[in-house]
Image (cartoon, rainbow, N blue to C red; front, side, top):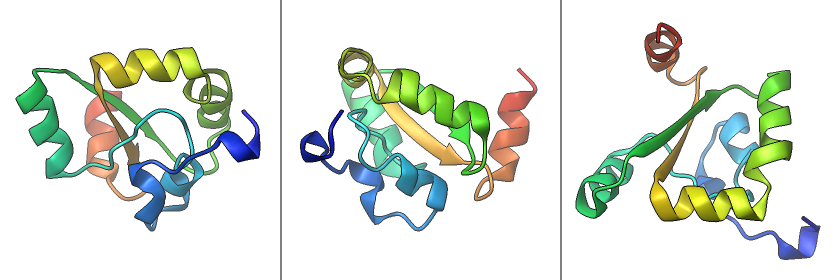
Length: 100
């Protein structure tokens, strides 16, 4: 995706460096907040949860190969409420979901 095609998503106003790295993905990411869960409930959609951190190599690979892909973004945006979490902001969530 070239720079002129990029449009900010809901992460653009976040403070986390990791979330800001994803603020121009075509995936319409929500931060971990109540509005994401309300949308999921109102639209009867599952949450697509992605947890990572700014210096994670595989997080960057996943972004480049999946989250910057327009077809993947269309699928995620249509069928899920995508939520992006910085594990450094929510280490409890990171621990919880790493156990599964």
